[in-house]
Length: 205
Image: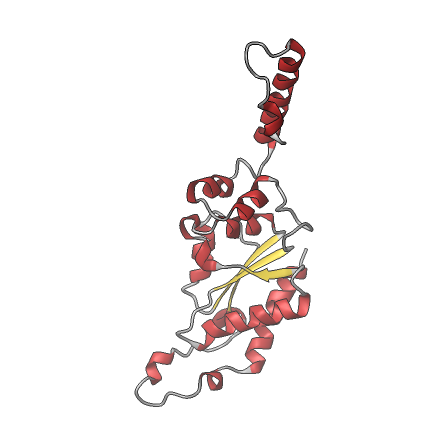
């Protein structure tokens, strides 16, 4: 609602009809503000507190973050680690799922933006999604822990080493000795199997 219309002629000499209209407009504005789930959300308060770009704040304030409008139907958070083969598979498989389903159906969330609400828009988009998934490489489940700490509800948590049955290999064990090109540690079959787990989780009712 444009509040600039409320500013003229608000002094003592303003006509009674205009003051009544002004009061009604303010009441309407207050009702809209109090009933909007996005305005009262933690993400919106984070916008004001951290002061990100005006465009992001406007997105949260107007309630545009809803399924089918300027957002993604599902969001997947891979652990995106790089210390082991299963960590890289979590990222590659998530990307393959996006390539197969399209960005309207699913997008990869920015895990680094969640702690302490560092980037409020990340939480806004995740909360607007139908499903939030996490894909971790190993049982440490770093992605799941971060997403849960941010207060997001996880529809499915996938662990590559367990659910896709991929043996974890930590790269540091080969440093200074038998280190190979990184892609030689990754099997296409393992990426495809993990990708399918993500796709199936999204399609599940």
